[in-house]
Image (cartoon, rainbow, N blue to C red; front, side, top):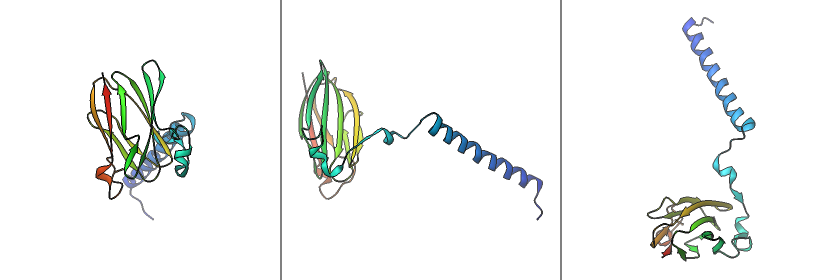
Length: 157
Ligand code: CUA
């Protein structure tokens, strides 16, 4: 079969690029230990969320002088707890999981925005520097009651 010289050159260059990309991906994954963010998530049994610590006692827990862990459960169609009081200036480490389907976790007016997947614990740290009432809402369509799924975060002076 006759192959044009330029065609051969492109085939060689194309194959070389594929090999280079595979080597780069292989090196990143296996030698440099790079993983997608989801691989760092803690996994739990989504059917046993309410029996699994820390979700057996959801809510705000003080862990240091001005630092809190907020353990929350997302479910169809709400959050547990649905009302949270947080002192102004507190550093809050969110730990959230879902008991049923994929939900969103967005606090309007902040950069807190997570996807909550059943069986995975999503984490985020945020400092509430402004007092006021913040709306936590679900921004992933999760069923017929999606639009009523919310919680209120009250940041107090
Ligand atoms: Cu939960 Cu939409």
